[in-house]
Length: 64
Image 1 (tube, rainbow, N blue to C red):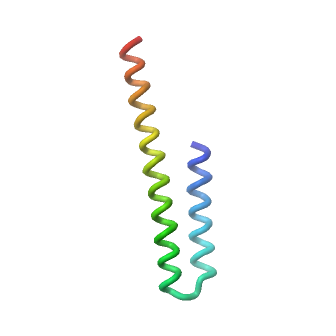
Image 2: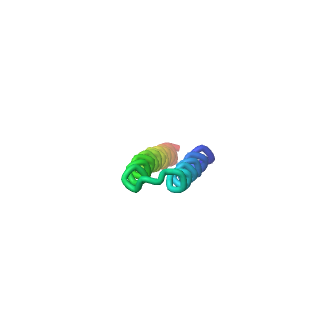
């Protein structure tokens, strides 16, 4: 969970820096969109790992 929180914080910081430093609206929105895409992919992977861990713990409790 800690690595995920750090990653999401880094994405948020990068988005804030992007918003404040890029003046051209088109490039700003493109950069924000790319960062958002990677943030969503990171979140999706994190949820997948959580789901797999829950499934494994459920399988282990049924066996034992």
